[in-house]
Length: 121
Image 1: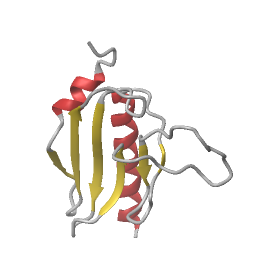
Image 2: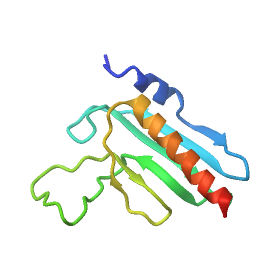
Image 3: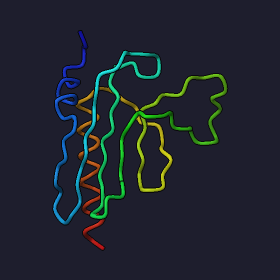
Image 4: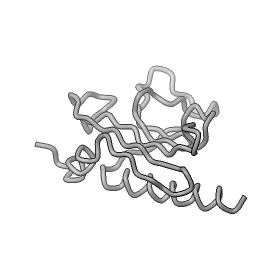
């Protein structure tokens, strides 16, 4: 049994598309996998915000490891897969996964911030 009660909420949101007005939309994907050293919470996920033409402009996921900034030495260390993409061309920066509710909270707060910035333009 998973100790994180938010995991069930995250899994229940799988395949949801959420309209954000102005043509922007959110897609949530989440499915259970075997817990491993790089995915200790046992969930693969992708939470993304898209512009009207479909391009991803924000994303939180764990599809691959994110390389840490060059100033840190990580030789021989397993890199966590949880990361976020801050814009369309961002390769990703590490994200510290605490629990599923925090992930959802962080993602939706960032969506609000990004959309507020987009609407100022």
